[in-house]
Length: 108
Image (cartoon, rainbow, N blue to C red; front, side, top):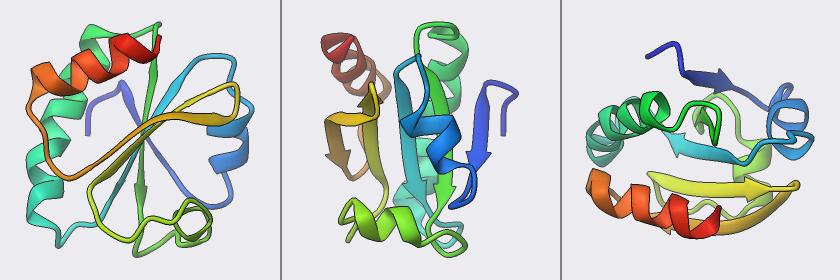
């Protein structure tokens, strides 16, 4: 994982996502998920390109289930963009870099 993507869990979700002054992309994923492994490098590239504009985080749903359940994550990868502690954009499934970047820029 790149230095610009932070692994978070149920204990750090509130502080890193809900209380963040910066918009936060949360990638709900699991190591066994093929599409998640496809999205991972895209998230890492965008984390480098958009550093300072958006905070990029990952939540392993096998290890941290509380917030995944709270936000109704039924399929992964699930990408949720939080702004001011609220979900402003979400996408389920793999998507290409240009599509994810466009989704993020529209929400900013």
